[in-house]
Length: 510
Image 1 (cartoon, one colour):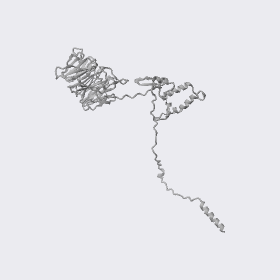
Image 2 (cartoon, helix red, strand yellow):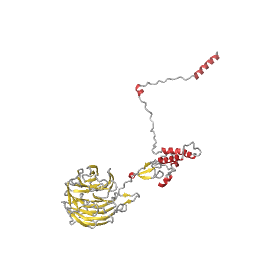
Image 3 (cartoon, one colour):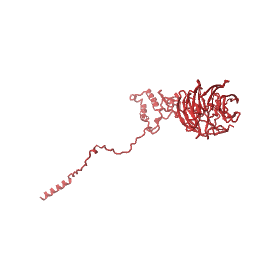
Image 4 (cartoon, rainbow, N blue to C red):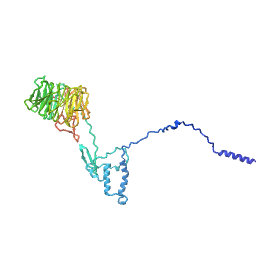
């Protein structure tokens, strides 16, 4: 009995040691209906990095990866021709296609590339298949991709070996350089400080005329020689306007005594004196043998310089002094501006009344300039209370554009080579401003005068602009310089303004 009891106790202990543990039930809190319908909030994660593959050339990378297989195929062409569907013609076609699409020099294009220049380096030599380098232009250079031909408007076109014309990417325009200082400076003592006068002009023969009080000087820009052409009989009789004829042989001179004189520049002699006005003659303009004169008496007289009775027509539409007068380049229209803030456009075929009368300006209209590349485009500038430059279509009478210059507009000159226009101004900066047409973006200012820049004229070659200001100085600016392809200055006519860059020459007219 003792043994059986001991065995029964040991069995019970063993069973207690090896029995599985008791399971403890946990109570789950109840979930509300609103929480069950709520959208689960996603776990917060860091920003995802998106690599920039804009500079990767995947086509070139794929080509480089398979090029080794292609080269091996070419090497084993003789041993296993049946395994590859290749012929010499197909291989040549693939080479040409590769050169056209990837701009890589092929075996057949090495001869062509030697004509245009040294062949470019082959992409096969680069071990970097996917590299962060700027992507090459599809067109590439002329070398290794075909011959170059000129397209319309000067655009270059690359002809690929397959005969596929590909437009070449146009070169960016060169940065427009504006001169920081004048190339040459002349002293102009006693120049009259009067906004309504026109005291400077540049002839087709490269002769510059300048009116100083009661005298007129001419400067031969080819030789630099300055001579006095004439002087009025009375010191109180001030020269108020000068204008050369189209051929540059004759210079018309208006004065405060209401007379107009025509001088032979070469012989320095007065050829004729024209009468008809009752007040000073502040503006003159030639149209062949017709000389138009505007006066403070508000009249415009057209003189036929060949006839004894020279006044052929009288234009009346202004009520105050006519201070701006310009014939169009083709001679079909005459623009006149006055101190009455009016701008009139007259047709040569019918001068009985102006074709258009514009009253948009709020001050005197003196600055007038006809566009050299569009015959019906006229630019006009207003005085201190206006300060705007306006552009007109004289065929339709529409105002094409207007810009506020923030200062008095004294003179306007178009470029003969580019679509640009330069304006001269008064207070407060007394500067010349170069504008791009038709956007009227300011390209730069020419500073150097200390008083308002009253007058401007352009050289015969269209490269140099001369300005005369109330500070009694005359400055020459190479504003519209024409650059040749080799980087040297291009000259179409002799000019006495050629000097070392940045060098200022100063001399006295008198």
